[in-house]
Length: 603
Image (cartoon, one colour):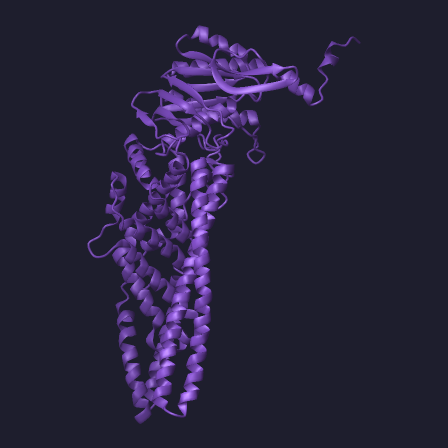
């Protein structure tokens, strides 16, 4: 991590140095702009009395110089904005490396599903989540794709392709950051890919209206001739034609407004999408996945980025329809709006059905780039290998990715099934729940095609299912116990169907009395073994550990130990074979002010 902090700090220093040069250059350009403007005016008046030709020539020379200086100044300003955005991106990476928070990008809270098999328990979405740690997407399409990848496992073939693509993308930091820089600079507010996908496949209100189409070409020609004729003859023809123009505008006013509403203010969104595609389609890729994505964008006529740019330009021109100059000079006589809408309709006919495919490619590019950034930032993480067995998991030095590098304690762990349940006991705060989440989060990353927080990892392709963080629901009129039973019911349904699942269960049936909890937990574990499930069960119920003797080879005990020195607690967060023998609840209760000695006092 220190290497990456050093990298980003050096990058910021270089950018700031270039920024100072650009600002210094802009001061000179501003000065010479002023000189050019004053020289053009002053010299024109000085030499006007001597020679109109000389005065005009000097004026034009300094006017051209002024235009060139303004153009250079504007280019410089754009560069300054680009460098400032890149500095912001690098500072965000430093912040993310040191705090595990990533405020510059979405935390994915909108993607959180209450009944998802694992997302809530493993903090996949929301503040301080796995999504926020990895997300570097600047489009809604990219965010959608990343959320899908973290919500369900991919096939082994797709995982391997993604891993190779991520490795290739991780080596081109400048390329990745330039895409982010462009998207952030536009500050997208109308990024709604689903809307545009539906729009692209829906016929325009002017589609196949041949009479209107030919009218907007013929009538402006007739109106121009009538206008000329009005100066030498009668004004009646031009008056009649203007009335016809007004009538056509009136009859189509609502359709024009509706068509404009469907595309209005989406220029920046399309600019970003076009830029991403342009950067992608012009690269020479080596990995199979990136080549496949590039092939999906290929076409016989022209690059996809140019097609999207054409639509962007048409929409931006249409957005000018409320400009008074446009309305009076172009729209009334020459049907400015209708010409643009017919051109947009033609674009839709040619390319509208391809929008979904293009956006899908953009989503994958951004999701892969997000994983590439994760891999680049964490050189000590690995890309896991995939086992064809059900079930097998080997992890060496695995830790939770959301825990600070300096505080993270890593563990080696081996789990092989089917029909295997590990019962994990331990004192309060010893690390049982964190360990379950460590397993779950790394499996989710592995099966999405991302690097994992481990030195080595081999894992089977499974769906993770959890029952860890159960809450009651006033809205659904459910107690926490009933909510947990419903979650366990979902787990049992998958187990009974012998689906490939990895179950992570933390203190199951906690909402009932200890006797019923023990009875239910014991029955559930035996059922899991019977149906060849694979599970890790964290519990304080030490009596469940006897199942290792009852079901040898299927149930194994693991525990987290604790060291107590007087009233001080020491945790090593290392998982071991066996059953926990040391507990800290009495010490913690005393620290909180509960006088346990009162139980031994005589009355």
